[in-house]
Amino acid sequence: MSLRRTTFMSAAALTALAVALAACQGSPDSWGTGVVKQTDAFGDYSETIVAVPKPTAGPRQFQCTGPFAPNSTAINLAADFGQANVVTGTVTSPDGNSSPGVVLLPNDPALAMEISFKDPGALAGPRRISFTEESTWTVNGIGIGSTIADLEKANGGPFRIQGFGGAAGGVVADWQGGRLANIGGGCRPGVQLALPATVSNAAQGKVSGPRRLSSTDASVRAANPTVGVFWINYR
Image 1 (cartoon, one colour):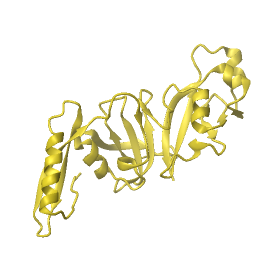
Image 2 (cartoon, rainbow, N blue to C red; image 1 turned 45 degrees about the vertical axis):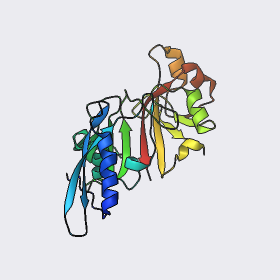
Image 3 (cartoon, one colour; image 1 turned 90 degrees about the vertical axis):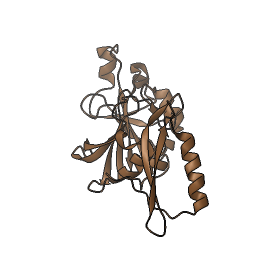
């Protein structure tokens, strides 16, 4: 995969770029390196190795902008996160089928994500981003382990979930027009809640089966489910 970004820049701009990039070199807290190629009007180009810094400590707030914008590509991801941190392979698409995609930051379970694309041949236009069960990423303040109350606060109101049990058990079925129905950039978070191992059979039975339940339901609150996995779907 090429990391070629073609632009036309003045000598002064190229000098400023080189100084800025040099300042990023040698950081001990880095995801790796990327390569930026600058091309001038005569067809000559220069290469610059770019150190890709890790985010600051604490939860990593995901947004559908920058490398995760709706028009992003695997090349953009490699330029931002480093070629070694973008691994092509087979990932699961929203319909449950397998398709070509990329695994970003595969060596760090807390940051890794799978990305499927609308154009799988070109690896362009994200379609779905799936986070791991160990992820430290958050979306609008929610992440692995978030409670019903956390979700209602982020959403600005109640929502509805599928009854527990089966592959889709605990999936949020309707944000009911809340803020999580669209977080910007045409993105919509998907969430699947999980029941704690300590929940009693009686409590589990009250929230299981092929039905939809409100997050305000007393039985749902008593079962105390938390976010087990989450993902982002693009329009």
